[in-house]
Image (cartoon, rainbow, N blue to C red; front, side):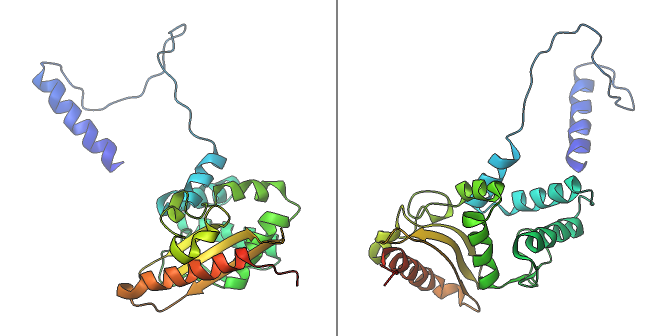
Length: 225
């Protein structure tokens, strides 16, 4: 609304300078019957928006989608509604939301907590669970070394995981996390979740490298033996 008010104020100034009389209020009117359509715009689908959010780790989009999910379920399109919708979804998928302590929908809040076991459980449900909608969401996970937030990772000793690992990052000043899946050398699908807390921001890169190396080793192993 602030942006709309600023736009209206500046537009009124320009119109007044051009000699156009501007009314005190601006009313919205419908098009007259039979008027031709000049243009139309459609939003990306929710699935496409979710894929973008996961791939690029877009916090603003995550917040918006959380609130939309709450609204679609009959709740308020608010922060509290988004948190409730996420916990309800975790309970449906995992049977419990105990592994999550949430204060927002994107994970930036200082009070947010997520247990690696719960994150791995979500990935497992997405990959192997009975709900095809969850499997469809896997398409949004970044591919190691190729796109999204993993485009610049999995080089050097971790190069064996490039193109094989698909995972969601969780990188903050003092936290580094990676949750996803890989198909190992035996063709077995493995899910994982790695989380490091309390990092020195100046020394975070070696931790990311260590995580990539470990996950790449997991992808390259023959784990049936």
